[in-house]
Image (cartoon, rainbow, N blue to C red; front, side, top):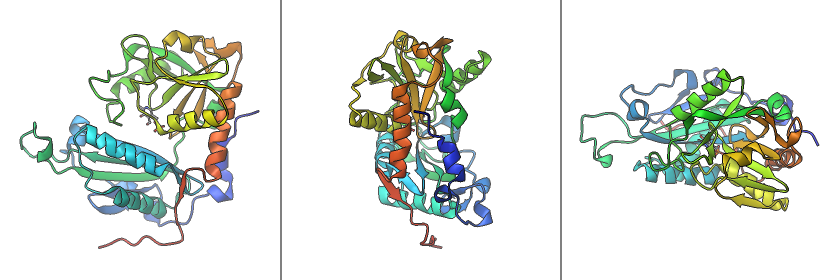
Length: 329
Ligand SMILES: Cc1ncc(COP(=O)(O)O)c(C=O)c1O
C-alpha cells in the first residue's frame, strides 16, 4: 500500500478545485472587528494583548472537498480553551460557525485552512489582574489549505530529532490542552532540527517522556498497537480521529505516558495535525524506524483511511457554496 497523494488530489481533482471568488479574496478572507475583508488587508491593533502577551486562545479547522471536518468538535475545544484562559468569545458557537462558513464561501476555497481566535483585547490601562475588565476580541481568517508536510515528505517519511535544547512548556505553566499562542519552545526546536539537518523536532516533558511536536501530536507504533501521550499535549482533533480510525481497524490503542526510548525503538511513528493529517516518520535521531526506509504499514493504513473517509463525508459539514454570503451592513 502506498501513501495517498492527498496534496496532489486537492490541487488537481475538479471536486476539490477552488470556486469563483471576488479578486479581493484571492489570497483568502478575514473577519476583523465584525467586518469581512481580504486577508492581505486584515490587521489587528498593535495594542491588542493577544499580540503583546500571547493572551489569547485559538483554533484551526480544515475544509476538504467543500466540507468542514469535525467542526463541532473544534468549536467545543475552542470554547473550552477560552474558559481555561478566562476569555469570552463575543460570538455564540452558532455565530462562530456562520462567520467561518462565510469566510470559506467568500474565498471559494473547497480546500481551506480556517483559523480563529479570541484575544483579551486592547490594553486599556485598566486593572490587569481583572480578567473580566477587558473587551475580548474575535478575529478569523481563511486561506487555501496549507500542508505542513508535503506529499513527497509523507511518502518517504519525515526525518526527525528529539530536541536536546528545549522541552515543551510544562502543563502547570501554560495548559497545553487550551490551544494557545505560546509557540517559542516549538519554533526554536524546529530551528534546532534544521541546524541538525532534520525536518522536525519532537519535544519531551521535563522527565523524558514524549509531549508533542511543533503543531502536531506524536504517535508510536509497537508491534500491532499504537501509543500516544495522555498528557503534556494538546488534545488534537486529528489525534482523536486517529484513535477512532485505529479502533475501527481493530488496532489496540494506548493513551499513556510514552518514554522517549519507545520512540527511538519504535516499529513506526507518525505525527498528527489538522494542517497535515497523519504524517509518517522515517527516522528518529538517525535511527531508521523498524529498520526500514519509509512509512510503516499501520501508519500508511491510517493515513489513507483518514483522507478516504473524509472525502466520503465522514464527520463533515458541507459548505453551501451556492447560497451567496449576505453581509449585514
Ligand atoms: C501544539 C499542538 N499540538 C497538536 C496539534 C494538533 O492538533 P489538531 O489535530 O487539533 O490540529 C496542534 C495543532 O495546531 C498544536 O498546535
